[in-house]
Image 1 (spheres, helix red, strand yellow):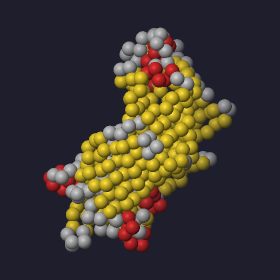
Image 2 (cartoon, helix red, strand yellow):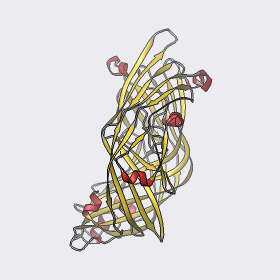
Image 3 (cartoon, one colour):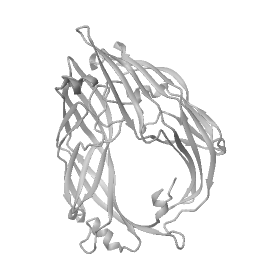
Image 4 (tube, helix red, strand yellow):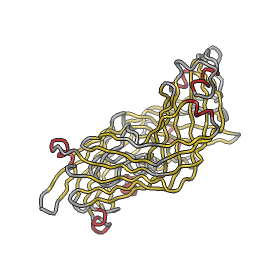
Length: 425
């Protein structure tokens, strides 16, 4: 569902129910030809399996913005808890073999599908969507993308529905110390189309219930520093053993590198009978208003050119690096303060700390965080210094040291009146 903005009209939309069947299986092993010795991956082998669950949705929308029309296509499937399963063995120099068995739960997958002219490209590989990754060693999505099938289909064929999109394929990959096979049996089955035509705008229909939303925008003007996560496994064999994590320790370095811009926004929303000053007070922009009962949530991102580097020791050293393209900023209101977190956004794996080495997931934990008073937002520009923390993830204990900081400059404050039903969707 697309909600058109103030300058955009939604001319038409076709929604189709989607059912995904099959699975994606990756079988891999350390590969000397691609550098497993330098990365400490030669002893690893195993499989990783992703099996989407149930139904999803494919949507095609035609919009008009400033007199120009364009078409977008989006796809979601996989359910809200889609398992990724790993079974990985590690052959040691002593001749013994240990095993890691793990699973992660992906919250479904969302694709923004490329549209060119009257055709759309559908496939499992997408730079912002990641299917692989548990706490076991293994390949990343970027390693296998070239072995996945893509289909280019006419928009009219998609809009008619009652069709299948066959994404089954079989291929090989060899990259970053690992090599193996990729097999997909995934087929997408499209249901009947549901079409709607409407025009955009910021005013609800007469008599419709509505809410007021006030958004304060920021430009990220600077990102500095870095963060180092020290990793140590549990000493209890019953805890570390199933993950082949016993004795593992080392660091994961998050280095933003070169900063190239970014933005953030905070939004307060409330029923239309609440005056605008109450929403401004909830955002910390004024003291003249009643902020009680008003929800505030926000976030943003900063584009960077850095890396996430793992240097982890366990009867040998596993060293690997993935590109870090963005930092994710989250802001949440807690009483009279904002809780701020900053950490790596998803890059080449399903978790921000994931590399091809074994190790912890960041998950829902904050890599770095800070607490600032609401009054900070009344300043036209301010810098937030993020400190480290600690958390546990499965057999791992992670402690972070941080010198990260981010500078925000307030750009504009906007107000919109939106139908409550549209906001829920």
